[in-house]
Length: 136
Image 1 (cartoon, rainbow, N blue to C red):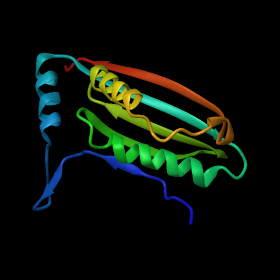
Image 2: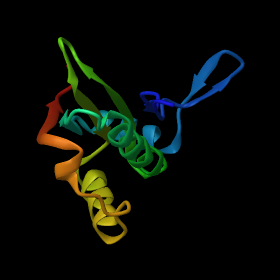
Image 3: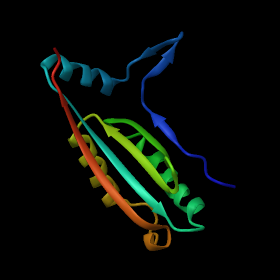
């Protein structure tokens, strides 16, 4: 059976039809009040090898399960690149660059089971966007 795509987000908890912010979102709102909003967005493009889709998606989904409980995690979306079914794209957002760095250190210390990436992907491209905005 094929692995489904995953779309995870913290977004808050639903209560009586309203969205109640989680603790890390309240911290983000305090940063907004101070004048600067920063967020780190990580975009990864996995170009799959033929017949590797199921194994690759299982690995990406396993990573998503681990990442969604981490402090500072905002959301993660995984899908296909428009017009290229062999390319899986994940977009992950963190409250701060420090939150992302903590996750990367944790992942390095306890990685997913080893896999020969050359058997799953013909290429993997990694891009990072640091956002800054100033309230009016």
